[in-house]
Amino acid sequence: MSFDRESLALLDEALAVLADGFRHLPDVPQTLDVAQLREPLLAAARRLQDNAPYHHPLYVGHMQKPPHPVARLAYTLTLWLNPNNHAYDGGRASSIMEQEAIGEIARMIGWTDSQGHLCGGGTLANFEALWVAREQHPGKAIAASSQAHYTHERLSGVLGVPFRSIAADAHGRMDAAALEDALQDGTIGTVVVTLGTTATGAVDPLGRILALRARHTFRIHVDAAYGGYFTLADNLDADTRQAFDCVAQADSLAIDPHKHGLQPYGCGCVLFRDPAVRHHYRHDSPYTYLSSDDPHLGEISLECSRPGAAAVALWATQRLLPLVPGGAFAQDLAAGRMAALALYHALAGDARFAPLFPPPLDIVVWAVRADIASQASLRARALHAAAREHDLHLALVTLPRAMLETCAPVRTWDTDTLTCLRACVMKPEHREWMDEILARLDTAAALVR
Image (cartoon, rainbow, N blue to C red; front, top):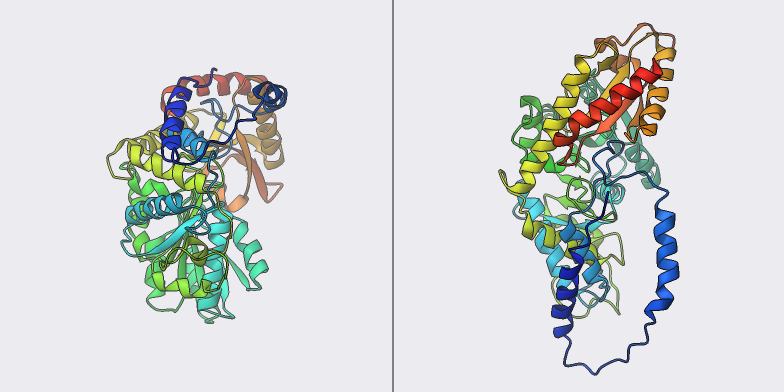
């Protein structure tokens, strides 16, 4: 597969526009020896061949989606200046572009007057939200589903806050009844609601959890690092749609533009419904915040130096593909979910496989049928390896028996967990490539049998 190189001509044109803004400065002699760059750059290219083809539609393993060409170009363009979005003094234009891009994400979820910024990724976005939650409810625990991302328990430990794991139902969603039981003793100050778990794409019942908040006092943080953009999709099932329609009532939200937002890695986002949370960040830097009375991004962020290039890339992408229902960006999300549903139905019609449940978003998980559980896990691992030999790249996930019994993949359970196969069908091209994906899966499965 060839990589796009035609767009590099646009980069040359954009660099000329950028340089024109600084034409009043004295020339600096160019000492760059391009010939010297050739060997290390080509050596790096050869080293990078030792990768799975993350950019290709036959890669459905993990949540790796190539950046949009405009994001690649805008990010690279900005590197000639390398602005730092910690303060306006270090990145004036890119800081304003970040605020504009963040405002569009906030409006996507229904917030018109909120507080937020970009950060290194979902882990740091969740960390900031849980840090604010600790400050708002000191001494109280953080609760999340047993299927929530492991980072919440880890970050609770970093923050010195107790963590409570809440049982999940057979579809991997937080069990609202179990949460209600846990809330009775009044020790929980924050509930993390996951809209799109990274294991199975499960969507917690946010509406029911909001109803519990009306009877108990706690913050709701929505971890939508993976699934947040699906609020724009027009083909969600009723339960999933209901959850996304409630997001504006949460207290904070994490979303990763470097997942479905078509950005390079290092682009996460945290948002707070109440802008007053900025007082928790209050600090002074006598040499940094000089050029504006408005809050610099570093004054409302735990991170200090942050790449302005990430903000420019996101801004340019959203200028090309606005975050609006029915737009091209939303249509691509819907296409990914359609591909995931096509994969699910094909697996459901194949006696060799046992898919868990229809995908709420675009992750599909299935077991390989066998007489006993341990054998099913072995077959899944073997199929994973065989598929890779046929250039079909899947992932593996280990799930508890309680989530698998309804799809009955085995006759006898000799283990409490089962290793299953997992596909992230998140590229727009996956819809057109599904026949090829299924053909390669069938070939690999025949070899394993």
